[in-house]
Length: 111
Length: 113
Image (cartoon, rainbow over all chains, first blue to last red; front, side, top):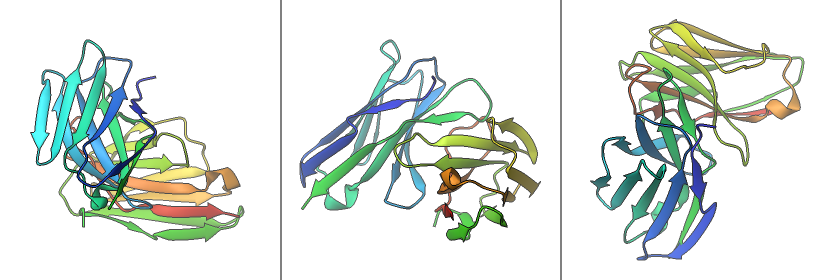
């Protein structure tokens, strides 16, 4: 399957701590993206990293990509209660229009 | 506000009903998508339209019928659904079908009785 798989399935931390979520995939990709979803809402795009990039930053987000291991990680630094949401990785392969999502990591940040 | 609007937000229907979900994007994009999100399952890509042409039908049952009259509007016509079709249906758009970032609507929560 080309779908990404996030790990862990659930993560619970205190405000101020860092949250790290991992994603593994099985086939070659053009890019990998991370999305966030608040309960019962649509997905919001967070960051995109291309296959020739190794690390990318956006505000409190840091994404790494290791194509040799077919894995990516999303780090949220100094987490806040408002970061509580589900986080999904998605891989864009070679087939037109096919963006594959994993099951997501449910992050809970306690105040 | 993501620029992608879905209506209705909630829909309850019987198995013999016919209803439609509507999606409209105000972003000038040329690709639109339907995804199905069920509990504890990965998002399932259902259909992809690129410049109004369907480029992907991911083995979706014929009781789901998409329609894309123009690049800004996408419909999902529903008829004789099953209870297992209850899910959150998400519409998304992107510049074209080979560009990266998707913009999602808030979803239509469908319950089939």
